[in-house]
Image 1: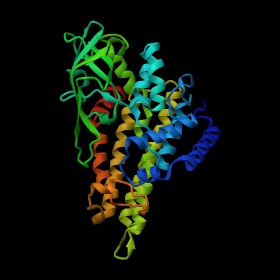
Image 2: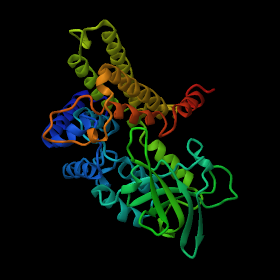
Image 3: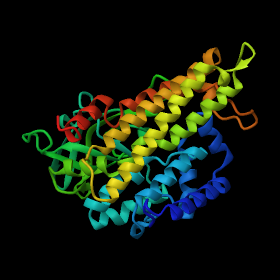
Image 4: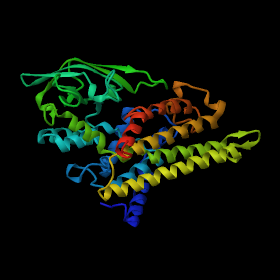
Length: 396
């Protein structure tokens, strides 16, 4: 385990990750990410399998469960280098969300059964949190579960459920005590998506994709053994899940990759005989983005040192998500502006990778821009993040 103070060891580790990515990241997956193509379930699973063979599929897991046992500094280096290289992000719902909850609050039987299946990719997970009318105010959720004869009977609806169409399992917040107030009376259940009474309906997003869904739960029977933690104490699990992966919200590596893409696009775009990269207004635009990215990276490093030292005010995740989201969206806006009329084409076929075709730089930009509008909403809206920062960091 390498901490952030050991700069030489950390740079050696970074070199090791870069060599691995250069040798093991498949060209078609790299192209899909760099060209903003749509990734399919088999793409994510193939990359997870490659990482698992190296022992790197679960950077945030302790080694006793088959994880890397890396320090937070190493995990940040790994995530950044993977994003810069164009590796697909591992789908977080199993590896980074429910797995830590199971390690902390799960029974031994739950750990023994689910953790190996999460690590291997045998079980694909989705998150059953948000509901119609219960998004940012998650504690107002109305999906209910009644315990009868060793089973929970679940009725309700979840929405914005990413990749539910692929999922084998859902970790789900349900109300098990209707008389309790707010966060009390909520339980954390593991639901088999193949159960009778589960219906998944796609929601088409602004970019034309269907990666999110509605999930209807009509009398779904869930074994009592699938309760994680204590009955009516699921909010404890939910808070642990949401706070466990605090630093990934900044997405520094993605910002670096997309800013590099913007700079290449400016070099390629010739207007009135001059590349956009030589125009004063674009030089200023890029310089401003470069400085904001440096500031974001410095913030991550500062908060990393505070965390390693046992200090912090609890608002770190909100700070990083707010700044990282704002910067990522600003970069995509500049990309679209730089492409100009070349980005007007919006074809669903453009999102499919054709290996025989040369790399495409602009055909998917409009869709990528539209897709990233969501990042200021999911995981807590920008407005919610500002409220958290005001309360926890500023004492307002």
